Length: 132
Image 1 (cartoon, rainbow, N blue to C red):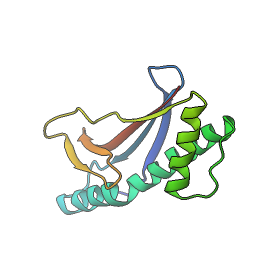
Image 2 (image 1 turned 90 degrees about the horizontal axis):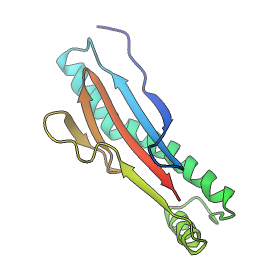
Image 3 (image 1 turned 90 degrees about the vertical axis):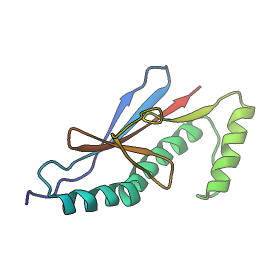
C-alpha cells in the first residue's frame, strides 16, 4: 500500500478573458482495486464539494467586486445576487470542462453535476467560471 495522496486544486486562466478554470485532481496510482474504488467514491461524493466551495468563494468575491452582496449565505440569496448582476449588465457562466468527454474515462458525476474522469491513474474534475 502506498501513502495516501491528497486532493490538489489548481486554478488557471481560461481561454476567454475573465475566465478561470478550477481543476481538482487525485493521484490513485499504486492503490489496489478496493482502495481505488474507495478513493473514487470519496472523490465523487465528498471531495467535489470542496471544489464547489472554492468556486462559490470565487463567485462571491466577483459579486462583491461588482457591488452585489448576497444578504446571506444561502443558495437562494446567491441566485438573487446573480439576477442583480445581470441587471448591471454582467454575467457569470459556469462550464463543466469535461462535460463532452465520452467513453471509459468518465467514472462518475457528482451530486453537484461535475463530471469526474480517470486518466493515467489520476481522478479529476474541472470547472470553468466565465465572467463577462
